[in-house]
Image (tube, rainbow, N blue to C red; front, side, top):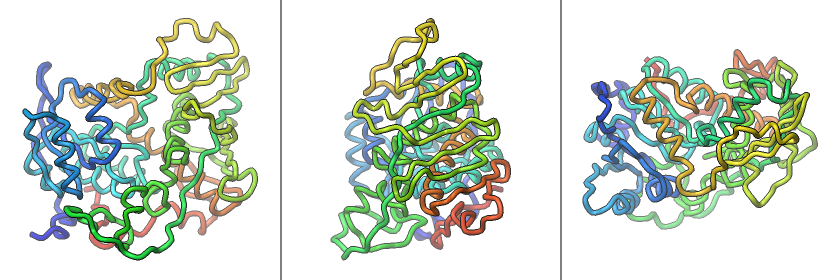
Length: 409
């Protein structure tokens, strides 16, 4: 069976499901071994689990990741992730790939009976998110999205208090005005690196000539992400927008109206929800990563939920708060452990698939609104724009032959 046939085979691979005892260690694989996966391997704990398999379309990255695990580790290494699923039979996989490749891998893993940790942003399009929610439900899989602020104790504590009415009804939520994606300008082909399957890397997108700018800075470009550079809409913007969505308690819905405040690529965008709350991109960029949070203006006060720290208009609002969390190594451990716990208990994760889909959808809606430069009406139940064919055409994208999403089953 050749590689393309293997990747596009219509019959999903089903693996036997394990029943976990209290002391059973989870078998974990990682798909996509770039910067984010390397960070996790070097700086975070996988308590109660063993990294048993590694996969990347660039084989040298597999070898580099294996060296991080130490001399005693003998992970299964495969360039093609489905072969890794077959050989290693992991209980879970961390999908740390490029955004444009993520939905297909997540779907095929869940269809194979594997629970998944999806790096953020979970999807490239709104339609992919609804599709993944359907796959997770149909195949009874646990999904955790990498919006780890939901598991940082101080963030989770204040989000719950806001949802319970700490500051009354929230009238407005303010996040930074994050950047959108760039468009790729065709460039002459460059020499292909050894050990790289460029066809697999391009996945659903156009099979362009190889260029290192695409491989290294893919997150800058519309074809591959929605603005995944640090201060981009689907980069750090995903964290801030998800933090707002979590604190507002709107994980199962979306806005009813989206409109630009200004013109151009950096136009501020506002979104109004059915309950009247306004989510605005109007904050300015700050150098201390407080951009990864949200300021919430309520009827009886104001709170700001940053990444691991809090500010409030009334000191009473902070009484009983967990200690602040220092950014850096270890801040993902709560999120990883929540994922592992839910694999064992089959409970819903902190950043479950519906919450991840709804938050990521806000990122996509911002980009669509900026691109069209006009007010849009959104039906959060149908997940369609009202009477707007031009906008609805942007809810999904045409996928390249051989990389179509399989039927949910």
